[in-house]
Length: 460
Image (tube, rainbow, N blue to C red):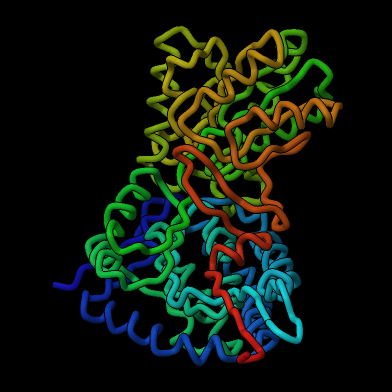
């Protein structure tokens, strides 16, 4: 019997979408088509590849209303937020603008005797394994520069957002990108692992869990396949004594709760200078209590369900464990909290780093807040984590932020903002958050390899 993948909607528990997986043979055939098409795609002029990719993004914008509705059904984001096209377009447009610079030759010499330069050339076939929480934006981070650089792309999307890959394929194919150049596939874990272990791909980009990243590394062991891995996070915020309190509360709490807390770089722990601690907590609790939890199709809803009950169960367990160990939960259970996917946003104080809620990834609408005496204590606590994606510093002194940032074990340092991906900067992490980087000029470098040319113009 053919195995199928099912998207169970967090809205009402129904099966929203179902697709059969490819057999191992059919999957290998898809990869073979991508390999066969790659050289011709890379031989097209750069401007032509850019134009086709831009048309694909434009087509995605044209169906944004449909996409927004589908996202609400698949992963629970309220329709009032309008989907993801704004971020998708920002990232795609930036990468098309810098493509020529990111892929240009680096010339060392062009004299009467020698021409010496380094050229960026595509890897070949790129496998993108995309997550469900920001299913379009995370996928686009790699798809757009990979295609522009001359790679062919095979996309395997998360089961929770089963329709996203189909929509992306429809849009790029309608724009004129050949079907063999960009393929959406439905694969189970065993077939994916087998393809990776067979060195079917020339580069793999994965966004997901630490455990998932470890499985990919294990499957790729000995193949020398390049990997880009964005894995877990436990991103901290630090509110220093000179911070703008109102702005810090509004931004950090939104970063903790938006998308039901299901953000790669969402804020999961906050450290506040003792002089501002009480005021910050009071305002943070009021902020959390102001959310309207409910059906994502209701225009009044500001906080939708988590994508799956098992994700909400993790958060509930972390909160219960923290409270049992002495923490205080400041938000009473909302009437709409059904014990399933609909989960009350929570603010915790009295937390310590012995509690899972301050150590393990929550990926839900909960944040722990701790009091600190100075910058040194804040730094020690922020770095006391197995993860390192982003950190948010709140101060009115850029020099202070830079000094602190130099000591933070993280991929990105924010000052007076949080939970944002700047496409001009490399999106990267350290420690268990993973390796590699996407977007920016470095994103093009990660999706290509250097090839050196040493051309001697004379024979004597």
